[in-house]
Length: 414
Length: 150
Image (tube, rainbow over all chains, first blue to last red; front, side, top):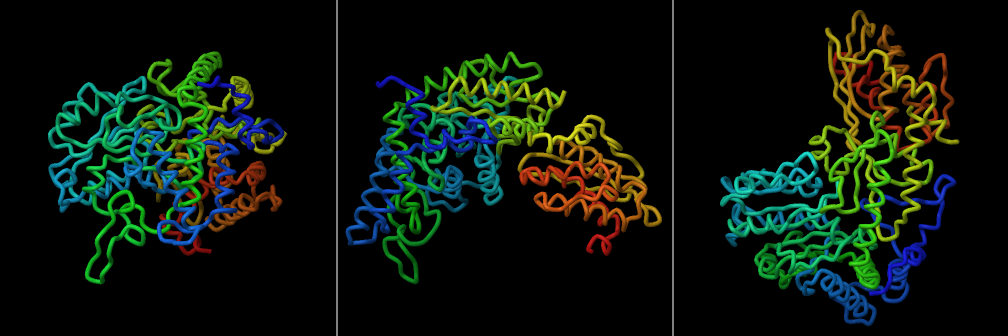
């Protein structure tokens, strides 16, 4: 493995050299969307400048090149998570990937695994992003199934003490976040998957915040579905990924209908392509997929173990530094154990919006609000939090700038 | 420093020592407004008698801008004629949505002029308007619709 050199990494990200409000940019909002290296920007530009054509339908050279690049990206993304290309479905984002799976379930599903009705149960947790709550609420409304969830402990862990009552024989699907997007908890998915297997339920993991930050191998994980999104892992927006086991994807009905997903269309009815094409109706986000392929190449070049180690050092540094600032409280795990780099904090007496505004005045970009995980805020009795989410390009100097900014916040609101 | 335009002393004062805060009885109507992007919330009640805003009472949670704006609202519209309170609401809204191009009139807006700096921060305009929109809504619910329409 090459030695990790954060200065060299930073040189790959053009935006990191800009200023914000007269200060060097300190970008601590990568959990929201990551910045993009020149290699990704160049791959997208090269596609449009040299190879642009539509995919999967053209006999001409440009169409063939575009198709090869698009399918090549699928292969790269598959290898990145240890899956064959045919198990990689390109979507718009993680949200669409989760909705796609939710829509496979219905009262009239021909495959028993996807048949869901009154008496059946869907299991999520209080820690989920809204995108892993709302699709399942809508599914339960459509089918009459019951939605259940794991609660949270005071230190921001999933409360698995009653796991056998939460995941019962009635459960058909369990959908859980791998790394929390708001408080950084790394969830014990092996325990949850083992219980789901006992009762024959399928398992979906929301990997939006894990796949960008750590080595993830779908075989080792042992779930049935994994959702993640390109723009949080150095890729462009508009491209997400659903990984699913072949046997399950084959058993699932189409999601959106249209071109590219059909075999034969007659006015009396149509037949559909096998996965992944079955789930990719219409012209896909070609340039975006190619950009994601370049992002995966970039991350693989750096090495995901190295990314993970770097973030761990930054997390330790940040937790220690935050502990020195009076009136700052961390929401979620306070130790390094089973926690990722995302840290939510509260400055006592100051609303996160005000914290974020003052930090921005010093060039420090963080996210404030409920982070699309309102139930977590409710659980911890806060209207919102300030979230710090570093990435492979984050430096300890940037964390120092954050800490200085927090002192400014306290001064303004003293 | 640009931050001073946003966090004027008047705003911080209203935030730390809000005027008229708390829900009171009696009231004619209540409105609950939220800012879904950030979770700011306000519950606001109005009491109207003989065409006059007798009381505005409120509770909520949110940033300094949203909470201070509720405090200033209370100061400006309490004991005003309903029509006048709506003129003040319109004047405040106009300043807030002007991106800083409209000079606020201190005779009309009092401490509300401190919010002129907020208009330059598009992400915060909704915060400043939260209580005012809830006030307009509560008046409508209290049966002042034709005036609110204007």
